[in-house]
Structures are given as C-alpha cells and as structure tokens.
Amino acid sequence: MATAGIKERAHIIARMGGLDAAISSGALPETVEVSTSESLVLGLLRQGVRKFLGVLGHGNTDIGETIRVYHEAGALRFVQCRNEIAMAHAATALAWIYGETPAVLTSIGPGALQAMAGSLAAASNGIGVYHIYGDETTHGEGPNMQQIPSRRQSQFSRLLDAMGDGYTLHTPEALREALRRGTETVHRPYFAAPFYLALPINVQAKRRKLRLESLPRRLQARRVAPVDIDPYDDACRLIEQHRRIVIKAGGGTRRCALAVAELSEAADGVVVLSPSSVGVMPDAHPRNMHVGGSKGSLSGNYAMETAELLVVVGSRAVCQSDCSGTGYPAAQAVININGDIADANHYNRTVLLNGDIGAVIEALLKRWRERNIGSNSDKEWLALCRSKKSEWSQLKQERCGDIRLLDAAWGREVLTQPAAIKVAADFARTIGAVKLFDAGDVQANGFQLVEDDDPDESFTEAGSSYMGFAASAILAGALADRPRPMIAFSGDGSFVMNSQILVDAVAHGARGTIVIFDNRRMAAISSLQVAQYGKDFGTSDAVEIDFVAWANAFKGVKGLFGGYSAAELHAALGQANAHAGLSVVHVPVYWGGDDRGGLGVYGRWNVGPWCEFVEELYGAQRI
Image (cartoon, rainbow, N blue to C red):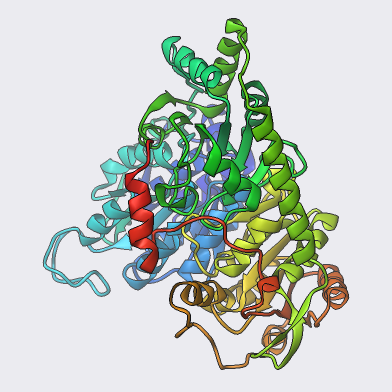
C-alpha cells in the first residue's frame, strides 16, 4: 500500500520537472526514508531514465507498486508489455534510434530469461539499456518458485555475468554501487551495453534512510585521445608509405560521419561500410564503396581484397564484416581507431589509436597537416574502385526494377525481394521514415541496396540478427519524446517469431508500417544450404498464412495486401501511411535459383563445408 510520503515525493518530482530540480529547490528533504524499490526508481530518475517497459509478476510486485505511484503522478512513464523479448527489442530501439535510456522490468524466472535473450540485440550493437529482473530471496528459506532449479547460490548472477555487466541488489545499502556500475555500462561512450540488475523479492520492500544527493548521476565521460605524438606519426608514415588505402567504417562511426569523410580525403583512400554503418558516407560519395563482407558488394569487397593498408574505425571485425578474418588478403599493416582497446588490437601489425573516434581522427589529421607530406595513392587503383562501384550500381538497378519471377510456392509470378524492398525503401525516403531491417534475407538485401545519405535513415540489427527485432522496434516510436515515422522490413519467418506488436501498438498508440516480405521460408538459410550442399532442408513453410486477415483481427491495426507488382506495392504503402495507427502490408516475394532473385554474395564465411578453405586463408593473413 502506498503511503502519503511516496505520493508526495512523486508529485513533487513531477511538478519540478525532475529529481535534481526537486533536490536543489529544497522541495524534497535531504534525507528520506524509502523502500529499496523507491530508492532504485529515484536513482534511475536521477540518471534520466524516465521510461519503464515492464511485464509484472510475483517477482516484482513491490517495485511495480512504486512505479504505479510515480506513473500516476507523471514523474515517469510505465509501458505495459506482453512479451519480454519484444519488450527488450523496443527498449533497444528507443535507446538506439532516439537516444533515450529506458529500463526493462520483468519478474523472476522465464520472463527474466526471455528479456535476457532479447537483450542480445542491445549487447551486440553496443546499446545501453537497464534490465531489472526479479530474483530469488536472499534468505534461502527454500527454493523460490521460478528461480533456476539448482542448489548453487545466486544462479541468476552467474547468468548475468556471462551476458555482460550485472549486479545483485543483495541489500538496500548496495544501491549506490549498483547505480554507479549501471551508468558506467549503459552510458559508456563507446560500445555501451545492457546493465542487468537482479532485484531479490524480499529486498524490494526493505526500508532505509537515503540521502538523495548520494545517488550517482549519469556518467559524463569526456572525449579522450592519445597524448603522445608517436602513434600519430606512426600512422602518418603508414599512410605515406602505402598506395592503396581502405577505411573500414564500423557501427562506431555513426556519430562521426564527417570525420570519416575527412580522413578518407586526407589519406586519398576509399571507405567500406558495415551493415550497421550504411549512410555514414553519402551513397553517391565517390569514395564510398558501400558494404563489404561475407555478403557485401562488388565494390566494397574489391576494395577490401586489394587494399595494402587497412584503417579500421569503430569496427569490431565481426566475422561477416571481415569475411571471417580473410577480408584483407593484400593488407600489409593496420591503423585501428577504436574506443575499446581489445577491438583496437584485433589485427596484427597494428598502430593502435585508442580513444574517442572523433577526437582521435581530429588529432591524426592535425598531425598529418603538420607533417605536410601528402599521400602516395595509386590513382589507377582508385579508378578501378570507382569502376567497381559503377558496376555495382548498374547491377542494383537491374535487380531492383519491377522484376517478377515464377515462384513454385506461390504458383505464379511475384516480385523479387530486392525489387519489393527497393519500392519500400524509396517510399520510406519520400516520407522521411526510419527503416528498420529484420534478420535474414530481408536484412542482407536491405543493406546491399539501400542508398542512404545519413546513418539515421536505416537501423539493421546485424549484431545478433535477432528475428522479430524490426517489428518489435516499432513500439519505440510510440514512446519517444520526438518520434519519427517508422517502417519495419520483416520476413515472414521473423514476423511469426514475434508478432506481439499487433497488441502493443494498439495499446500504446504506435504508428508505423510493417512490410512482410513473404517467401514462405527462411530464405537466407535455404540459400545457404543450397550454396553449400545443393539442397535446402527444414527451412521452408508449407503453411499458408493470411497475414492481412491476421492483422485486421486486431482492432486498430490495418492489414493490406501489397500485390504482385511495384505499382501495387507502392499504392498499398500509401494507404498504410495514411492510417493513424499500425499498418501491416503483406507482399509475396520470390525464392529460387534465378540469379535475378537476389543481389549476390561477394565474400567468404567460416561456415560448414567452407571452413577448411576459409581457415587456410585465415592462417596465411599478414594482419
């Protein structure tokens, strides 16, 4: 039962516009007596966490009651969700796309495990989100229902430590340390991560005196770069000595686009993107060779294969991004600019420039100008790179027209997936919508063909390729302070994996469009099976689903059929955009052996029967 004290505090904080203002004005006393649950809520509010996405259960009733009081007072916003995985995705999207740090709240047991599984998307993409899970009691009076069934102590803590940074709030007095560790994780300036806070059932209601000023504020990290001149000189010498220079811009460059362009000009090199950095260089920029990697592009992979010097900026060298370590067979040396020292030291023969990417590039360019030597670039190679880019542009134009092919599953001609994605991507640009790409073939074709000029035009969950992320992320638009139009690009398999948005969107007023590209299978895996073994198995789906009827079964959702042509799909997207709520557009797409059905594969991957070949190449790398 809420006391007058908690209600009064909640209303004061809401009226003053935040906890700090309430403290500094004297509207709240210096010391208050509060439960652990309320002290945690106060601590998160001080760090700017105002939005709580939750599934309530017996493992979090006390903190749920605290949040109810603060929600009703207007001091925070609680968003009831119905699936922990979808909730984790929506929270990830809110932090990633809109820059707002939310908290995910679950009960003990299965709910916490599901949220933890969903947090893999945030962990893999460097996104900071608070995850707060109910946990077993600290008294050991007997197994708690839904705890991990083992005689070991603190089993959830063991799991949290395996996933990343976690902490068990074992006593009320441990709160300050938990919040300090939390902000150092979720607000870290380079490759942030989820912070997992286990909240034992019996600790939540325990009361103690709390000095409000003792609550840790949000981490405010300063930009840092190496102060010694030697590593900059070493990097400059490498640029001077090598004639073919490729800059690999990873996801860490999304906020440093201008610096990457300036570096490419100074080095007289070319830039290859990762799936998560599409748009860092404007699409038509002559130095932008597009995405490189296991799927990649003609131009991106050509630049990677033939470059002599690799300049890595904000990239973790994920297997598909650097062809399982074989992406740079001609490279003789590396300059690695990265916030994380382990990522910066990934390759051999590396000049390591560890620090804030923008600050490091500024210092490197300053030293480059001071040396006043200039690059020694291979003009013929640069011309070949531009030629490959022209080939790639021509191929995309050919494969992304109004192409319809006879499909065995549909028994008629349907649009190819690249053609359908291109229509939806072009439509998204006309209305200024964020493009959200789900895992699988939709994701791969998407990052190959989009022509973004800004990194915030597309978000592709390539870190863990979590099926169901894109549709779930639509909810973030309903929660953001400054929402943007959103279009989710989802395969039929991904949508079926997690379709909870059909409920949550109506409940919370989400507006956006989900386009389901339906090829009746997990096409990315079917294609991989055919490429490796000549036959697909266990990845097709004989069950026909009326996605339009499914969507229309939810009052407030508009289901539309996208048709069999580019014109029909464009018209359906227009109707979807006019709907004041969530729309679902279903479009059948082709899968089969016709090369026109996709955009091709241009790199290598250490998977299945290719392992021996790729690993042999990896062992021969200089870097």
